[in-house]
Image (cartoon, rainbow, N blue to C red):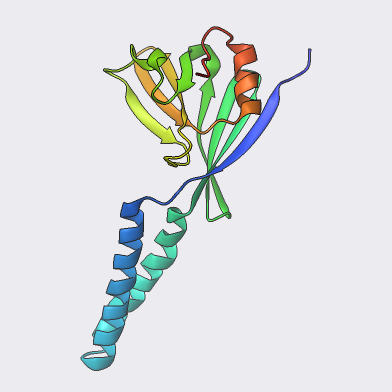
Length: 165
């Protein structure tokens, strides 16, 4: 028996709150530099601290998700600024109740009591698929941006739980 393996890289669109935070951090840094030049060099210490914070925090705004599917397991990694990788979670498809596109009527019975975790691109033009996972008391809806290849592999594993319309 051969292994089913597929992987997908999904770039997340920046949130408007992240864009506002980035602009605010740049403005605060510039104001501190200007205040340090005009008024007191002590403001330059604050500007240096803010510049270091900018350097540390800005890569967190550029996020990509990598999905790796292999024989009933989906591993999800976050990649920050195409340089730093962090393993987020591993999903076992044995605990998945339903896989359907966002807004599908198949998801109607999974409304209340489920926490939502979003690993999608946040693109309104391309709605994500929703995996409904029930594992004891852990009841989650997980948003993923699946392509046809990965969706077909999951459908081979869970033929009665995957809906594409």
